[in-house]
Length: 182
Image 1: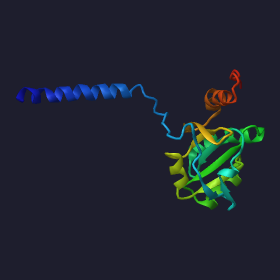
Image 2 (image 1 turned 30 degrees about the vertical axis):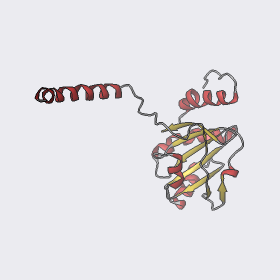
Image 3 (image 1 turned 90 degrees about the vertical axis):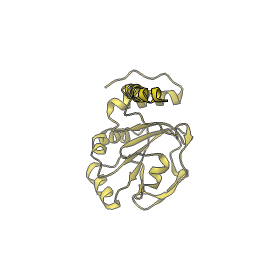
Image 4 (image 1 turned 90 degrees about the horizontal axis):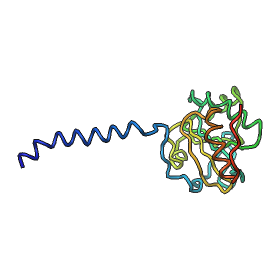
């Protein structure tokens, strides 16, 4: 038994070294979601404007669900992308105003523009918990049946839109992805 205990620290070191070495090759921006290929969580909430909203009010086409907050600086960075998508009108964007104050969120949209078909008010963060949200910003790609197909954690900038979302949307539509432009 004494021989084994003298080798235990060396064995523990090698096990730890292997685990840490493996961690070097993981993508820190990729956070798994148990909701991929599952329907949107059931919800009945209110929009920022106080209107009732639920699953029946979700778009019946491919859409984006963007988790944002007026306190979130990265949300301001990705905002021009959502404004462009809103202006083009091809992909509806539903907002989830996450753990924010309603007056601040409304002021933020007045100041920066409102790209959302509507924004769900999630002041207490319960809907975000149902979605598995870590924090703002996060964006989900949802198909026309209301099934979550992809989750992006972090800023959705134009290059992410072209390189990640457009190919995923093309796959959902069953068409080959168009070459990236712009």
